[in-house]
Length: 118
Length: 165
Image 1: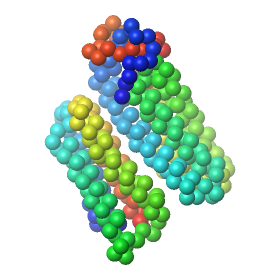
Image 2 (image 1 turned 180 degrees about the vertical axis):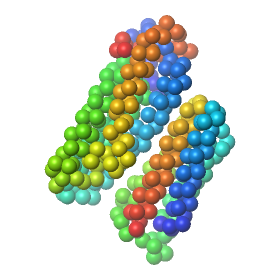
Image 3 (image 1 turned 90 degrees about the vertical axis):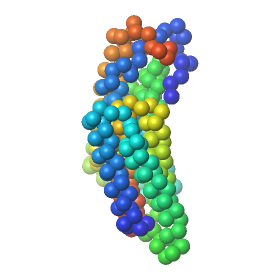
Image 4 (image 1 turned 120 degrees about the vertical axis):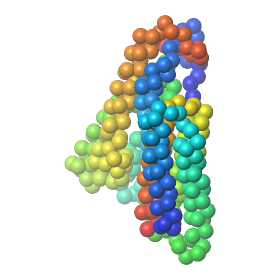
Protein backbone atom coordinates (compact mmCIF):
# COMPACT_ATOMS: atom_id res chain seq x y z
CA UNK A 1 0.00 0.00 0.00
CA UNK A 2 1.15 3.54 -0.64
CA UNK A 3 1.05 5.44 2.64
CA UNK A 4 -0.02 8.84 1.33
CA UNK A 5 -2.72 7.33 -0.86
CA UNK A 6 -4.08 5.43 2.13
CA UNK A 7 -4.14 8.67 4.09
CA UNK A 8 -5.99 10.34 1.21
CA UNK A 9 -8.65 7.62 1.44
CA UNK A 10 -8.98 8.06 5.19
CA UNK A 11 -9.31 11.83 4.79
CA UNK A 12 -11.93 11.28 2.07
CA UNK A 13 -13.80 9.00 4.49
CA UNK A 14 -13.74 11.53 7.33
CA UNK A 15 -14.68 14.43 5.06
CA UNK A 16 -17.49 12.38 3.55
CA UNK A 17 -18.74 11.65 7.07
CA UNK A 18 -18.71 15.38 7.87
CA UNK A 19 -20.57 16.25 4.66
CA UNK A 20 -23.18 13.59 5.48
CA UNK A 21 -23.55 14.94 9.00
CA UNK A 22 -23.94 18.46 7.64
CA UNK A 23 -26.66 17.38 5.21
CA UNK A 24 -28.44 15.49 8.00
CA UNK A 25 -28.25 18.51 10.31
CA UNK A 26 -29.75 20.69 7.57
CA UNK A 27 -32.65 18.23 7.33
CA UNK A 28 -31.80 17.53 3.71
CA UNK A 29 -32.00 14.21 1.94
CA UNK A 30 -28.96 12.70 0.29
CA UNK A 31 -27.83 15.20 -2.34
CA UNK A 32 -25.07 15.56 -4.91
CA UNK A 33 -22.56 16.33 -2.16
CA UNK A 34 -23.22 13.36 0.11
CA UNK A 35 -23.69 10.88 -2.73
CA UNK A 36 -20.73 12.43 -4.54
CA UNK A 37 -18.58 11.93 -1.45
CA UNK A 38 -19.60 8.26 -1.35
CA UNK A 39 -18.82 7.90 -5.06
CA UNK A 40 -15.43 9.59 -4.59
CA UNK A 41 -14.54 7.21 -1.77
CA UNK A 42 -15.65 4.25 -3.88
CA UNK A 43 -13.50 5.36 -6.81
CA UNK A 44 -10.50 5.88 -4.51
CA UNK A 45 -10.91 2.33 -3.22
CA UNK A 46 -11.15 0.95 -6.75
CA UNK A 47 -7.87 2.77 -7.44
CA UNK A 48 -6.51 1.18 -4.26
CA UNK A 49 -7.38 -2.26 -5.69
CA UNK A 50 -5.27 -1.47 -8.75
CA UNK A 51 -2.47 -0.11 -6.54
CA UNK A 52 -2.57 -3.25 -4.38
CA UNK A 53 -2.19 -5.46 -7.44
CA UNK A 54 0.65 -3.41 -8.91
CA UNK A 55 2.57 -2.53 -5.72
CA UNK A 56 3.96 -6.05 -4.98
CA UNK A 57 5.27 -6.22 -8.59
CA UNK A 58 7.31 -3.07 -7.95
CA UNK A 59 8.85 -4.38 -4.73
CA UNK A 60 6.28 -2.96 -2.28
CA UNK A 61 4.95 -6.23 -0.87
CA UNK A 62 2.65 -6.42 2.18
CA UNK A 63 4.30 -7.32 5.49
CA UNK A 64 1.07 -8.80 6.81
CA UNK A 65 -1.17 -11.53 5.43
CA UNK A 66 -2.37 -10.70 1.88
CA UNK A 67 -5.57 -12.72 2.40
CA UNK A 68 -6.58 -10.60 5.38
CA UNK A 69 -5.66 -7.43 3.51
CA UNK A 70 -7.76 -8.34 0.49
CA UNK A 71 -10.76 -9.28 2.60
CA UNK A 72 -10.68 -5.79 4.07
CA UNK A 73 -10.12 -4.13 0.72
CA UNK A 74 -12.93 -5.93 -1.13
CA UNK A 75 -15.39 -5.25 1.69
CA UNK A 76 -14.32 -1.61 1.96
CA UNK A 77 -14.60 -1.11 -1.81
CA UNK A 78 -18.08 -2.68 -1.92
CA UNK A 79 -19.49 -0.58 0.93
CA UNK A 80 -19.61 2.89 -0.72
CA UNK A 81 -21.37 1.47 -3.77
CA UNK A 82 -23.79 -0.75 -1.85
CA UNK A 83 -24.69 1.82 0.79
CA UNK A 84 -24.63 4.67 -1.76
CA UNK A 85 -27.07 2.76 -3.93
CA UNK A 86 -29.35 2.25 -0.94
CA UNK A 87 -29.24 6.00 -0.23
CA UNK A 88 -29.97 6.69 -3.89
CA UNK A 89 -33.12 4.56 -4.10
CA UNK A 90 -34.43 5.58 -0.66
CA UNK A 91 -33.68 9.29 -0.45
CA UNK A 92 -34.73 10.09 3.07
CA UNK A 93 -32.94 12.45 5.40
CA UNK A 94 -31.67 9.53 7.48
CA UNK A 95 -29.90 8.09 4.46
CA UNK A 96 -27.27 10.71 5.30
CA UNK A 97 -26.69 9.04 8.68
CA UNK A 98 -26.32 5.73 6.90
CA UNK A 99 -23.72 7.31 4.61
CA UNK A 100 -22.01 8.77 7.68
CA UNK A 101 -21.65 5.34 9.27
CA UNK A 102 -20.35 3.91 6.00
CA UNK A 103 -17.74 6.68 5.58
CA UNK A 104 -16.38 6.24 9.10
CA UNK A 105 -16.31 2.44 8.76
CA UNK A 106 -14.38 2.61 5.51
CA UNK A 107 -11.91 5.09 7.02
CA UNK A 108 -11.28 2.64 9.89
CA UNK A 109 -10.93 -0.26 7.45
CA UNK A 110 -8.37 1.68 5.39
CA UNK A 111 -6.44 2.29 8.61
CA UNK A 112 -6.51 -1.46 9.33
CA UNK A 113 -5.33 -2.11 5.77
CA UNK A 114 -2.38 0.24 6.28
CA UNK A 115 -1.48 -1.61 9.50
CA UNK A 116 -1.69 -5.01 7.80
CA UNK A 117 0.39 -3.88 4.83
CA UNK A 118 3.02 -2.65 7.30
CA UNK B 1 -36.06 -6.49 1.45
CA UNK B 2 -39.49 -7.30 2.91
CA UNK B 3 -41.70 -10.00 1.56
CA UNK B 4 -45.35 -10.49 2.12
CA UNK B 5 -45.10 -14.26 2.11
CA UNK B 6 -45.25 -14.70 5.87
CA UNK B 7 -48.28 -14.78 8.05
CA UNK B 8 -51.91 -13.94 7.59
CA UNK B 9 -52.50 -12.49 4.12
CA UNK B 10 -55.52 -10.48 5.25
CA UNK B 11 -53.85 -8.12 7.71
CA UNK B 12 -52.49 -4.72 6.81
CA UNK B 13 -49.52 -3.37 8.65
CA UNK B 14 -48.87 0.24 9.52
CA UNK B 15 -45.62 1.49 8.15
CA UNK B 16 -42.90 2.21 10.70
CA UNK B 17 -41.63 4.76 8.18
CA UNK B 18 -44.39 7.10 9.34
CA UNK B 19 -42.22 7.92 12.34
CA UNK B 20 -39.08 9.51 10.93
CA UNK B 21 -37.19 9.22 14.19
CA UNK B 22 -37.76 5.50 14.54
CA UNK B 23 -37.07 5.10 10.88
CA UNK B 24 -33.80 6.98 11.19
CA UNK B 25 -32.59 4.94 14.14
CA UNK B 26 -33.68 1.77 12.37
CA UNK B 27 -31.84 2.55 9.18
CA UNK B 28 -28.65 3.44 11.00
CA UNK B 29 -28.96 0.32 13.16
CA UNK B 30 -29.39 -1.90 10.13
CA UNK B 31 -26.39 -0.30 8.42
CA UNK B 32 -24.20 -0.77 11.48
CA UNK B 33 -25.42 -4.36 11.72
CA UNK B 34 -24.66 -4.95 8.06
CA UNK B 35 -21.10 -3.66 8.40
CA UNK B 36 -20.51 -5.55 11.64
CA UNK B 37 -21.93 -8.74 10.08
CA UNK B 38 -19.54 -8.41 7.13
CA UNK B 39 -16.57 -7.58 9.35
CA UNK B 40 -17.20 -10.36 11.87
CA UNK B 41 -18.02 -13.07 9.35
CA UNK B 42 -15.07 -12.33 7.07
CA UNK B 43 -12.74 -12.04 10.03
CA UNK B 44 -13.99 -15.37 11.39
CA UNK B 45 -13.52 -17.06 8.02
CA UNK B 46 -10.04 -15.60 7.74
CA UNK B 47 -9.06 -16.70 11.26
CA UNK B 48 -10.27 -20.24 10.64
CA UNK B 49 -8.42 -20.45 7.31
CA UNK B 50 -5.20 -18.84 8.51
CA UNK B 51 -4.69 -19.62 12.18
CA UNK B 52 -7.34 -21.93 13.58
CA UNK B 53 -4.75 -23.86 15.65
CA UNK B 54 -3.81 -20.81 17.71
CA UNK B 55 -7.18 -20.49 19.40
CA UNK B 56 -9.84 -22.92 18.15
CA UNK B 57 -12.40 -21.86 20.74
CA UNK B 58 -12.07 -18.13 20.18
CA UNK B 59 -12.01 -18.40 16.39
CA UNK B 60 -14.99 -20.74 16.21
CA UNK B 61 -16.88 -18.27 18.37
CA UNK B 62 -15.67 -15.48 16.13
CA UNK B 63 -17.28 -17.09 13.09
CA UNK B 64 -20.40 -18.04 15.04
CA UNK B 65 -20.85 -14.45 16.18
CA UNK B 66 -20.45 -13.30 12.58
CA UNK B 67 -23.21 -15.63 11.45
CA UNK B 68 -25.47 -14.39 14.26
CA UNK B 69 -24.89 -10.81 13.07
CA UNK B 70 -25.82 -11.83 9.53
CA UNK B 71 -29.03 -13.44 10.82
CA UNK B 72 -29.78 -10.38 12.96
CA UNK B 73 -29.26 -8.05 9.99
CA UNK B 74 -31.68 -9.98 7.78
CA UNK B 75 -34.21 -10.36 10.60
CA UNK B 76 -34.09 -6.62 11.39
CA UNK B 77 -34.61 -5.77 7.73
CA UNK B 78 -37.73 -7.94 7.52
CA UNK B 79 -38.92 -7.86 11.15
CA UNK B 80 -42.43 -9.07 10.40
CA UNK B 81 -43.91 -12.32 11.58
CA UNK B 82 -41.40 -14.98 12.46
CA UNK B 83 -38.50 -12.67 11.56
CA UNK B 84 -39.39 -10.53 14.53
CA UNK B 85 -38.91 -13.49 16.87
CA UNK B 86 -35.66 -14.37 15.11
CA UNK B 87 -34.48 -10.78 15.52
CA UNK B 88 -35.21 -10.87 19.24
CA UNK B 89 -33.43 -14.21 19.63
CA UNK B 90 -30.37 -13.00 17.72
CA UNK B 91 -30.19 -9.75 19.71
CA UNK B 92 -30.45 -11.52 23.07
CA UNK B 93 -27.85 -14.07 21.94
CA UNK B 94 -25.49 -11.25 20.91
CA UNK B 95 -25.91 -9.41 24.16
CA UNK B 96 -25.32 -12.55 26.24
CA UNK B 97 -22.42 -13.47 23.95
CA UNK B 98 -20.61 -10.15 24.30
CA UNK B 99 -21.02 -10.21 28.08
CA UNK B 100 -19.93 -13.85 28.52
CA UNK B 101 -17.05 -13.79 26.03
CA UNK B 102 -16.00 -10.34 27.24
CA UNK B 103 -15.77 -11.67 30.79
CA UNK B 104 -14.07 -14.90 29.72
CA UNK B 105 -11.45 -12.98 27.73
CA UNK B 106 -10.41 -11.39 31.01
CA UNK B 107 -10.75 -14.55 33.13
CA UNK B 108 -9.29 -17.16 30.72
CA UNK B 109 -7.14 -15.02 28.41
CA UNK B 110 -5.30 -18.03 26.93
CA UNK B 111 -8.58 -19.26 25.43
CA UNK B 112 -10.44 -16.09 24.65
CA UNK B 113 -8.02 -13.18 24.49
CA UNK B 114 -7.76 -13.39 20.71
CA UNK B 115 -9.16 -10.99 18.16
CA UNK B 116 -12.86 -11.54 17.90
CA UNK B 117 -15.90 -9.34 17.87
CA UNK B 118 -16.77 -10.10 21.45
CA UNK B 119 -13.41 -10.32 23.23
CA UNK B 120 -12.91 -7.59 25.82
CA UNK B 121 -16.56 -6.59 25.32
CA UNK B 122 -16.00 -5.67 21.69
CA UNK B 123 -13.01 -3.40 22.26
CA UNK B 124 -11.65 -3.97 18.74
CA UNK B 125 -14.88 -2.56 17.36
CA UNK B 126 -15.03 0.44 19.70
CA UNK B 127 -17.48 -1.42 21.96
CA UNK B 128 -20.14 -1.20 19.27
CA UNK B 129 -21.02 -4.92 19.79
CA UNK B 130 -21.83 -4.15 23.44
CA UNK B 131 -24.14 -1.23 22.68
CA UNK B 132 -25.71 -2.43 19.44
CA UNK B 133 -27.94 -5.27 20.72
CA UNK B 134 -29.32 -2.97 23.44
CA UNK B 135 -30.16 -0.27 20.90
CA UNK B 136 -31.62 -2.94 18.63
CA UNK B 137 -33.89 -4.26 21.37
CA UNK B 138 -35.04 -0.74 22.32
CA UNK B 139 -35.80 -0.01 18.69
CA UNK B 140 -37.63 -3.30 18.08
CA UNK B 141 -39.75 -2.79 21.16
CA UNK B 142 -40.65 0.81 20.36
CA UNK B 143 -41.29 0.12 16.72
CA UNK B 144 -43.47 -2.86 17.56
CA UNK B 145 -45.48 -0.77 19.99
CA UNK B 146 -45.95 2.03 17.48
CA UNK B 147 -46.97 -0.43 14.81
CA UNK B 148 -49.56 -1.87 17.17
CA UNK B 149 -50.87 1.57 18.12
CA UNK B 150 -51.26 2.78 14.55
CA UNK B 151 -52.51 -0.54 13.26
CA UNK B 152 -55.63 1.15 11.92
CA UNK B 153 -53.63 3.16 9.40
CA UNK B 154 -53.43 1.41 6.09
CA UNK B 155 -50.03 1.16 4.50
CA UNK B 156 -49.57 2.34 0.94
CA UNK B 157 -47.69 -0.87 0.42
CA UNK B 158 -49.87 -3.58 1.95
CA UNK B 159 -47.84 -6.01 3.95
CA UNK B 160 -48.87 -9.01 5.95
CA UNK B 161 -47.91 -9.79 9.46
CA UNK B 162 -48.52 -11.99 12.45
CA UNK B 163 -49.70 -10.66 15.77
CA UNK B 164 -46.35 -10.79 17.49
CA UNK B 165 -46.41 -7.19 18.59
